[in-house]
Image 1 (cartoon, rainbow, N blue to C red):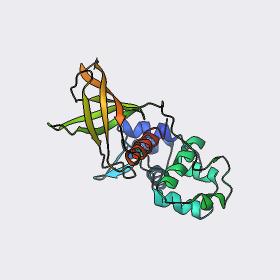
Image 2 (cartoon, one colour):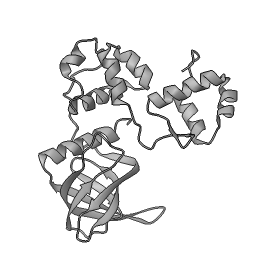
Image 3 (spheres, one colour):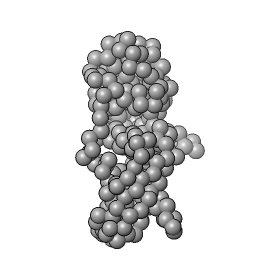
Image 4 (cartoon, rainbow, N blue to C red):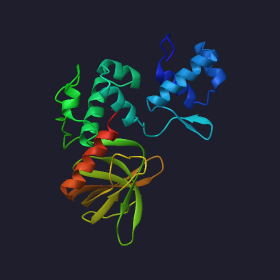
Length: 234
């Protein structure tokens, strides 16, 4: 970012509304070089990406594990990392936990520098009751037969709300969750029983709620990882 601090949310809101580079330079009184620095900072923070020559805001924020690892290993202070990637203390904690879970960094490596507001490294546990609501499309497959594709609307360690998969109360189904964008989450499966059926406005969409009745430990870890990623910016 330029020396004069800008509000990243305001800039992203303008980009999402279709404001072009000339409009951004005029509104925020930026030079062309300053604007390129803004774009670069937002891209490095995972808040912006270049698609076919145009800047777009990704539906899922993509932080570069390689860049964050490089900064951690170089001894960069957590406050500096937070400023660089526009993270709150809780978001930085979740970033560290995800890196640890994927064996990309060790607790010893993290303790070798002043971790500041990062506490209880690696010991954060997702609460079973924590439910997250998705603002992007996460595919889920009823493995059938017949095989039916649906979309996850909300999920927790105990259950999942799904659009596009018809069911009746008491039905037991086996689901597969896989998403190309969530590179840190392996595909996972679980068995679940339908506990409720509802219609959601305004599209009169049928949504079914399932309680997870069986999931392996390996798949449960992937589910927890997914919840952590989805709630990353909550």
